[in-house]
Every structure is written in C-alpha cells, then in structure tokens.
Amino acid sequence: MSGRSSGGGHRKTGSYRIIAILWVLVFVSGCQMLIIAPILPQISGQIAVSESLLGTLITAYAVSVGVFALITGPISDRIGRRRILLIGNTIMTVALVLHWFVWDFASLFGVRALAGVAGGILNGASLAYVGDYFPREQRGWANGWLFTGMAAGQIAGIPVGTLMAEQVGFRFPFLVFGLLLAVALLLLWMYVPDPDVELSDQLTIKSALEGYAVLLQRRDVVAAIAIFVIMFGGNALYITYLPTWLEATLDAGGETIATLFFFGGLGSILAGPRAGTLSDRVGRKRIIVAASACLAIVMLATTSLAVSMWVTYGLFFVVMGLFTARATPFQTLLTEMVASDKRGSFLNLTLGMGQIGSGLGGGLAGVAYASVGYGGTTLSAAAAMIIIGILVWVFLPETTQQTRDGSVVLTPERRTKSGEK
Image 1 (cartoon, helix red, strand yellow):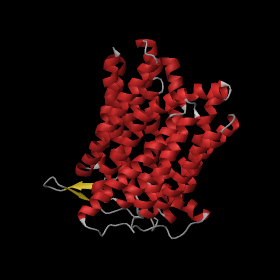
Image 2 (cartoon, helix red, strand yellow):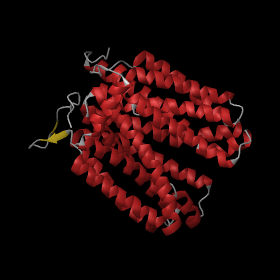
Image 3 (cartoon, rainbow, N blue to C red):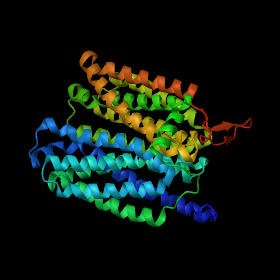
Image 4 (spheres, one colour):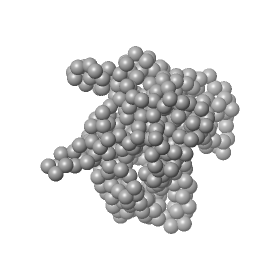
C-alpha cells in the first residue's frame, strides 16, 4: 500500500520519486492554465474569433474549476487522493489532446471547460496527497518543491509553449503538454502508492453538505478561507496592472515583461523549498507572518524603487519569492488543520474560494488603477498583506510548538469526525 514500513533508504528514494512525479503533474497543469492568455492573439487569428469572446475561454476554465472543486473534495475524502489524481489527470490528458482537434471557437470553449473539470478534480489533490503521505516534519519541504512546478511552468513552459503556438499553431503546445502528462500519468499509476490514512466512511450529497457545514462552523476554517480570498486578491491587485504601469513609466515591451516574469519564477523556485523546509523547523505561522510583513514593505516601495527595468527585475524576483515563501507554509499548515477524512473537502473549499479572491482582486485593481494609479493598487495590496499577517497570527493554530531548549515538536492532528468546531 503506502510503503511506510519499508527501510529508511527505500522510503527516502520513494519520497523523491513521488515528489518528482507530482512535480510533473503540477508543471503541466500550470502550463496549460497559464499559457492561454499569452496565445490569445494566435487563437484569434487561427480560428477567426472576435477578441470580445477570447476572455470567455478563461472564464470557462475558471467556472468549471470552481464547481468541480467543491464537488470533488468530499469524493477524494471517500475514495482517496491517489484515485482522484488518476481520474483527474486522465481527464486532463484527454482534454489536452482534444485541443489538437478543435475546429472553431465553440469546440475550443468546450475542451477548455473540460480541462477546467479536470482542474477542479485536481484542485488541491497533490497538496492533499502530500498531507496524507508525508509526515508533518517533511510536508513543508515536499510542498515547497511542488510549488516550483508552477514556477517552472512560468519560466519554461509558457515561453516554449508560446513559441510553439507561433511557429506550429496554438493547438500544438496543448498536444505536447497532453503527451507529457500521459507519461506522468503512467508513472503515477506505477509508482505513487495509496497513503495509509483514514478516509471518510460515507459519501452522499447530504453527507458532503453536512461536512462543509461542520467545517464552516470552525472559526479557524472561516479565517483560512478569508485569508485565501485576501491573499489571492492582494496578489492580483499587485500584479494585474504592473505590466501596464511599467509600459507607461519605463517603456517596457512584451519581451521585457516576459523577462520580468522569468525572474519572478526564478524567485519562486529558489524560495519554495527553503521556506517549506524552514517552516518544518521553526513553525508555519512565523514564516507566513514574516513573509507577509516583508511583502507589505516591498509593495509599498515598488513605485519608488522601480526606476529601471534591472531594478524592477530584482524587485519582482523578491516579490515572487516572498509570495511563495508565504504560500508554501500556509498551504502546508492547512493540511495539518484537519484530519485526513476531511482534508480534501477543506483544501478544495479554501482553494476554490481563493479563485474568487483572484477575480475580485483583478476587478478592484482596474478600479484602483483608473482612479488613483498604480500607487493606489500597491497601497491596497500592501494593506491586504498586513491583514493576512494579523488573521494568521490571531486565528490560525500553530501545528508545531517550540520547547524551552528551542527545539520544535509537532502538535497532535486536529480531528473533525466528532464535529469539532
């Protein structure tokens, strides 16, 4: 089953192999989601669709993700994370390959919606698997490496995919991502075991709704949802109009902005594993609060410090590194707030609400940018970071505790089957 009784060397090798496979899954999932925006011009030209409809491709994916995330969370608590990973990645593989066969906007809209279904099924699945399989003293390290998969998609997957879309056609990068995911899916089936954890003993619509209701009666769960909404919203406030502002103030073109996000992705890759490992040693909340405070300072200073693109590259490197340094221990902490039989429901609920926060943040960014300029959006984003730090410190539990000699020990797992609030 899980291989937890094997020798230490075999266990360590198996852990690295599992992380590598999950990393590829996260990488491909991130690539297929993030690449849509950069290749919209190619899509418009190759299937003759009006620009006014292009944004609905992103909407189709996002809506499907949100709906199926809520549906799938309780299912994963009943059948286990390995099966959810297999089901979701199978559907995603099919959806990506089907991109090769689209012939008009309606067919493309349909396959993007199908990809969103898979994204909703997979929403939080890799994170929940880490929570199920890895002991808590390794979860920060494991999640830190998983986060680099999304950053690698930003650094390598998007530029290469955009080039393929320009040279071969917009369908081609999706086909390549689908074939890569098919290989990873085979490795998942062969080498990723079922974690040896307790799962939910019932699955009905009523039990799913009751499970969500029990979660929402807990103050720390409501706080976690609020934090996710503010976190995603604050990130969107800062990032959405940064390229527009740089174009207006520093005459930054498309290649310059691409380079900016390359440096940002590099910061995420370097920060994720280190922040995760550090949170394993000193506790999650300290890292989250410290990173949020640093983000507030850097965001406030952006308009003053960004006097050249080279300075801005370094600034964005730091910002994205801090984003990841905060997100890694935060999502690891979430895996430790509930027991395994509620973990899928909890993670899908919080991540799904985060998507709403991202949409709200993007909309508010437009209002703020139009009324008070980019300085106003950075001020709002910085305020969001401070609020996050306060909410984390006051309302979220610490899943590690320090003894008098400075060492860190783990607190017991929270239980939810008894209806704890």
